[in-house]
Image 1 (cartoon, rainbow, N blue to C red):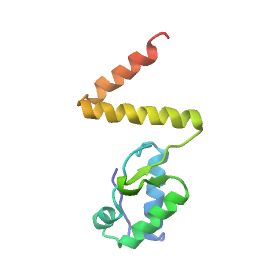
Image 2 (cartoon, rainbow, N blue to C red):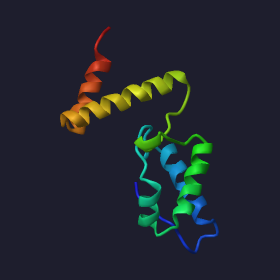
Image 3 (cartoon, rainbow, N blue to C red):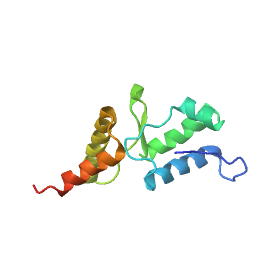
Length: 120
Protein backbone atom coordinates (compact mmCIF):
# COMPACT_ATOMS: atom_id res chain seq x y z
CA UNK A 1 0.00 0.00 0.00
CA UNK A 2 1.30 3.41 -0.93
CA UNK A 3 0.35 6.34 1.29
CA UNK A 4 0.88 9.93 0.26
CA UNK A 5 0.22 13.37 1.66
CA UNK A 6 -0.98 16.26 -0.48
CA UNK A 7 0.43 19.47 1.00
CA UNK A 8 -2.12 21.51 -1.00
CA UNK A 9 -5.12 19.62 0.37
CA UNK A 10 -7.48 21.34 2.79
CA UNK A 11 -7.41 18.35 5.17
CA UNK A 12 -4.50 18.28 7.63
CA UNK A 13 -1.84 15.60 7.04
CA UNK A 14 -2.89 13.44 10.00
CA UNK A 15 -6.46 13.34 8.63
CA UNK A 16 -5.26 12.50 5.12
CA UNK A 17 -3.25 9.62 6.55
CA UNK A 18 -6.13 8.43 8.75
CA UNK A 19 -8.56 8.51 5.83
CA UNK A 20 -6.20 6.64 3.49
CA UNK A 21 -5.70 3.83 6.02
CA UNK A 22 -9.46 3.54 6.62
CA UNK A 23 -10.08 3.43 2.86
CA UNK A 24 -7.38 0.78 2.37
CA UNK A 25 -8.89 -1.38 5.12
CA UNK A 26 -12.39 -0.91 3.67
CA UNK A 27 -11.39 -1.89 0.14
CA UNK A 28 -9.24 -4.81 1.27
CA UNK A 29 -5.88 -3.32 0.30
CA UNK A 30 -4.92 -3.61 3.97
CA UNK A 31 -6.10 -6.98 5.21
CA UNK A 32 -6.75 -7.73 8.88
CA UNK A 33 -3.53 -8.74 10.57
CA UNK A 34 -1.33 -6.66 8.27
CA UNK A 35 1.55 -5.11 10.15
CA UNK A 36 1.67 -1.34 9.89
CA UNK A 37 4.94 0.58 9.56
CA UNK A 38 6.33 2.05 12.74
CA UNK A 39 5.39 5.64 13.46
CA UNK A 40 8.98 6.75 12.88
CA UNK A 41 9.37 4.82 9.64
CA UNK A 42 6.11 6.13 8.20
CA UNK A 43 6.90 9.68 9.28
CA UNK A 44 10.27 9.47 7.51
CA UNK A 45 8.69 7.93 4.38
CA UNK A 46 6.01 10.64 4.15
CA UNK A 47 8.20 13.54 5.28
CA UNK A 48 5.96 14.19 8.29
CA UNK A 49 6.64 14.89 11.93
CA UNK A 50 6.56 11.80 14.14
CA UNK A 51 3.81 13.42 16.24
CA UNK A 52 1.62 13.84 13.14
CA UNK A 53 1.77 10.12 12.33
CA UNK A 54 1.34 9.24 16.02
CA UNK A 55 -1.82 11.38 16.11
CA UNK A 56 -3.22 9.54 13.07
CA UNK A 57 -2.36 6.15 14.62
CA UNK A 58 -4.05 7.14 17.91
CA UNK A 59 -7.20 8.16 16.01
CA UNK A 60 -7.14 4.87 14.07
CA UNK A 61 -6.72 2.92 17.31
CA UNK A 62 -9.62 4.83 18.87
CA UNK A 63 -11.72 3.85 15.84
CA UNK A 64 -10.48 0.23 16.21
CA UNK A 65 -9.10 0.22 12.67
CA UNK A 66 -5.62 -0.66 13.93
CA UNK A 67 -4.35 -2.07 17.21
CA UNK A 68 -1.05 -1.73 18.98
CA UNK A 69 0.46 -4.97 20.27
CA UNK A 70 3.26 -3.55 22.35
CA UNK A 71 6.72 -4.44 21.12
CA UNK A 72 5.23 -6.66 18.38
CA UNK A 73 4.05 -3.57 16.50
CA UNK A 74 0.82 -2.14 15.16
CA UNK A 75 -1.55 -4.22 13.06
CA UNK A 76 -4.79 -3.81 11.12
CA UNK A 77 -7.59 -4.96 13.43
CA UNK A 78 -9.91 -7.81 12.69
CA UNK A 79 -13.38 -6.62 11.74
CA UNK A 80 -16.96 -7.80 11.67
CA UNK A 81 -18.95 -10.14 13.85
CA UNK A 82 -17.47 -12.98 15.92
CA UNK A 83 -17.76 -15.53 13.09
CA UNK A 84 -16.05 -13.19 10.62
CA UNK A 85 -13.29 -12.38 13.13
CA UNK A 86 -12.66 -16.07 13.72
CA UNK A 87 -12.49 -16.73 9.97
CA UNK A 88 -10.11 -13.76 9.56
CA UNK A 89 -7.89 -15.12 12.32
CA UNK A 90 -7.81 -18.54 10.60
CA UNK A 91 -6.99 -16.91 7.26
CA UNK A 92 -4.17 -14.90 8.83
CA UNK A 93 -2.75 -18.02 10.48
CA UNK A 94 -2.93 -19.88 7.15
CA UNK A 95 -1.26 -17.00 5.30
CA UNK A 96 1.52 -16.82 7.89
CA UNK A 97 2.13 -20.57 7.60
CA UNK A 98 2.08 -20.48 3.79
CA UNK A 99 4.65 -17.66 3.77
CA UNK A 100 6.91 -19.58 6.16
CA UNK A 101 6.66 -22.66 3.94
CA UNK A 102 7.49 -20.63 0.83
CA UNK A 103 4.27 -21.55 -0.97
CA UNK A 104 3.23 -19.13 -3.71
CA UNK A 105 -0.15 -17.35 -3.76
CA UNK A 106 -1.69 -19.41 -6.58
CA UNK A 107 -0.84 -22.70 -4.88
CA UNK A 108 -2.13 -21.42 -1.54
CA UNK A 109 -5.41 -20.31 -3.12
CA UNK A 110 -5.76 -23.70 -4.86
CA UNK A 111 -5.25 -25.43 -1.50
CA UNK A 112 -7.95 -23.28 0.07
CA UNK A 113 -10.30 -23.94 -2.83
CA UNK A 114 -9.78 -27.70 -2.51
CA UNK A 115 -10.35 -27.58 1.23
CA UNK A 116 -13.55 -25.56 0.81
CA UNK A 117 -14.83 -27.87 -1.96
CA UNK A 118 -14.16 -31.08 0.00
CA UNK A 119 -17.26 -32.77 1.38
CA UNK A 120 -17.30 -32.89 5.16
